[in-house]
Image (tube, rainbow, N blue to C red):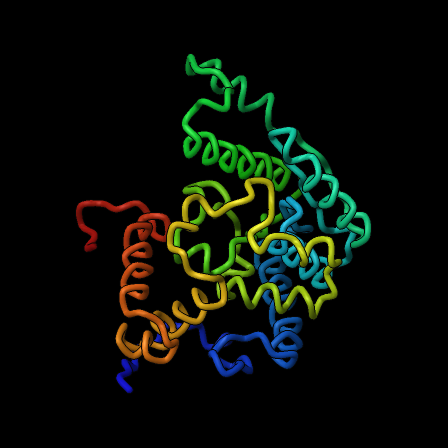
Length: 286
């Protein structure tokens, strides 16, 4: 079995109890996360001299987990959930998000992004139609959500809690300067499978956890379905290859998959590297 010893995982994450696939999905891991994550948020709040947290809510598991952890870190009244739908198709998810916020006991506000998007497109000489470029529209929506979250955060002395998990970040299933725009990435060390395990430990309602693994307003991962790899295999692959430093050949052998699948996923990660790093300047490598 070939292995490289330059794993780059954060020490706190390395401490987590893990299952046979190397993922932190065990009950013990969930209990440990419920200690680590609220403490992490409390430290951030104290360092910034802030008073509350702002979390976007869209009916997805990621946003529900982030809001729940925030409400465990501070009094629920010090957490503001923002529900920001755009299209009529978002209404069901928006109502689920609002119901979840009410059950959690946090404040929430609905901000319909559609008029903002329409005004923006009008200024640029385009119209908010389904025939517009889907990627450009999806990215713009996320950037407006980020701007709204920061506006309210600034007016209420708050911090914006990011909800992007490690799977989506590594694969670039994010909007540059959009959903990755936050004061912290609370779930940034946790793969999608691990977030779902934590959601079960937090007793997130079945209406959310039983939904599509990718949930939310957009209902997809911006083309990542093209990888044609199931979620758990994808997380196991990323964990072994990237975090634990196994070679591509060893990773494929451990997972019992075609080495071409590993290479396909790694190519995707490389192609979205620009989303995970600061903008390049002439003096920077890579």
